[in-house]
Length: 563
Image 1: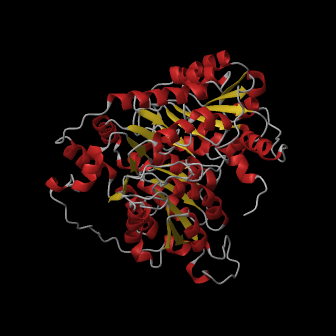
Image 2: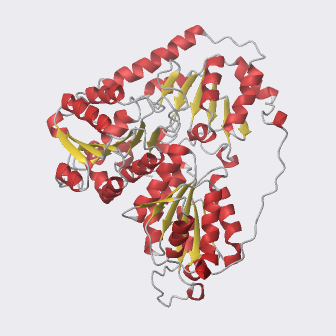
Image 3: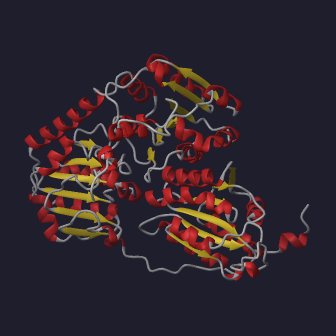
């Protein structure tokens, strides 16, 4: 038992945990270490935060990321110093790319040895700079007495637009330092309620109300601000086609007749944009891989809505910029437009629906036997299922486009494009919603990167469903290499017996060789509510009707050329 003296002492670690609880943190992910043990012990003594023990720091950071994306809350990851922090860096880059609020707590060497190079255990030459390069921001606690203020500021910074991961490193000797426990209160002026819906400039309203062929491009900022209902209302009011980015899936239900979806770089969509007279972009980064490296055309008139000042004109010229929270701006737009007489053009709406249907028909024609797997997933899985997609052929081709998403925060993918992060990200999402199906689409190559985290899912008794497409290699890269060079290198891999591997990790597992078998096993997995893996034998199932050659222009980008 702890002595009364130890129970009475208040340390930096206690201050950190107190701020986490104040911020509503209920779950944290990480690995205990000699460089974060005081924080872990403080979490144990406080008692309200559930600690998920990952098998690697990389996976822990992905878990915090997935938890935050599924909930909109803060994701928390705790790592050790040096190598431990470095292991988390790649996954924090993904959280940065996706704009996810994550707090990374890491230790540091004891304060007298910082920057000395004397070989203190776990020492890194310049850990703060390493984390600064991986995150939105990295800070070091300089005085133990400032712990509460520094943690609170770090949490605020993680949520501030543009949101992203923040690293806070705390020297190990500081973590157990006894400090005063004095209250800190945030005193802010609260704006009057009649100012929560902003007034929209008349020039912007005129551009929208006069448009006859408007297009909305909805991005991750819509999801972050909780503006999905407002986007749908705006689209219906002005009769707009709605394109979504990967991060923006769920901004509008994907069975809506005006939803083009995640098809921006398709020729049919590009033609629609060429003939459009107004683009309204909302929280969109216009990533290179989603715009064929910015070759997708946009109309001359472009109203850009974004919470980030630097997003305006970053990739496409905006003729009018509205900077602020998307939900509030859209509420103001919808309120103002309701006072105007706007009648959407029925012929344009018919054209939008025709483009929407033709896009899906064309893509379905390339799937071959995987069309039945797609339809089986959507028919079997509840509408609120969270679909997590690692970087793999089937996820890229149809998981991100044809599997319909009906609700915000039920679609998660790797924004930065790094393989292997799907499993721990899905674990984080499942930790947030244990009563809902979470399904991971992954390929065998990427899955092996964080395969050890299967044990984490089993230990937490999560009903996670892994759909593993096994083609014994890196399928996307195979196809790009074949198209670019007519040959392949370093893309063939030896797959383990995934069924035995999964069973050894506490999963129910099966290997299927047909779409019919897949649907049967998926139904069992949903009903069983246990960790489950379905291995899709892609050789047995058969090839797609048309091979996937990578994102538009990918093969050409790798062919020899003069610069």
